[in-house]
Image (cartoon, rainbow, N blue to C red; front, side, top):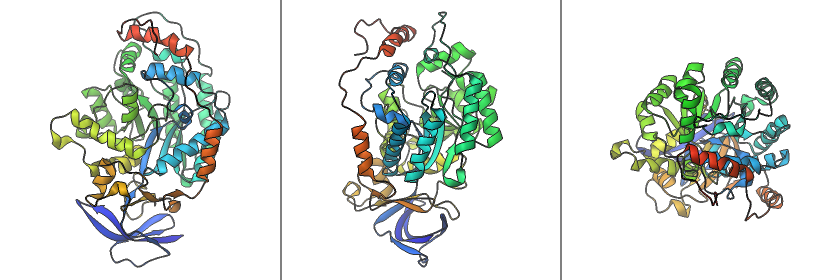
Length: 473
């Protein structure tokens, strides 16, 4: 299928040009001001065309708990998340659709889903998410979230001897499951990719990390993980390894140009140098870091050191949305308060490059995606510059990144297929999805997490907080 986007605005250097963009067989065939129309004509008048952004770290199934978990740090938040997760494959399917819709309508064409697996239904979990992403047409990087240590192991011991329950599945069985997921679902040419994705050093053994490295090398898979999201994880790494988590992951070989790492809040200068040397990617999730009190990642230091950085929404129970433009805005502006030298601050055009090409680099697809370059796949987003939230006319990219765009996405193409037109998703019935999400949920105003209560006292002690008789509420 061929089509030509006519008279559309694109950023060039520090200005803009009005061009025609020819698309043929799912790829950008030509970009120029005097190009003839090939195939179907698409009106780009008063619109801005950009490469699709990457929602480079999220957990789609968390949608079922958005807005309900109280303001507590990650180690307590996750205890409640896991306690109230009565998911089934149908819910996985619906929340993956919801995640995709919100991502598409906020400028994203790719999603990295660090997918929480239903115990005993792991393959069914991945199958449900893959079905959703195929139906809607978004490019998906499904990263089945795996661990081999119990949840209690994720909190530092503070020197105390603590026996943790064994995890529900052995390391070998977990790696075998991932191998099966790769065999069944990894179809890059069709827009579905499987990543190896241990949750992080806090709940994973070296054996699990090394097994993921072997799978990654053998099947040419990208690697994903959480890394040093909280101060507690930094303390835990010292307990486990006697060095930083970054140093340890480098020693065992997990870091590479195919590795993306979510959060990276509590890294020091030596850690940053290691990420730059290994060409690893940092996925910045500013809203969940603020929501959970995790801290502000040293993003400007990453950029100055040459570390590739991109953006993610994180899951919808720690953000609590999948508005990618919001994450990009906050993730760009937040760092103005961390460095007085304004020449280090992130410009709107740099934000666009981080969200598009930065995401592509982190997933080893920068030769195929991430820029409006001839030969790259047509993962494109066209914004309506007559939208009220993008007016009056000043700088289009500035309006998009620094403003609060609403209903600004006109069209989205993935691999040349138009899956959003006139601001509406064309591949699924979004009204039906809304009804299903509504009917399969209920209003919840009061609930008490026993798991959170059990973890809270130990957490407060290890982190040097005073005892609390009132609990988290």
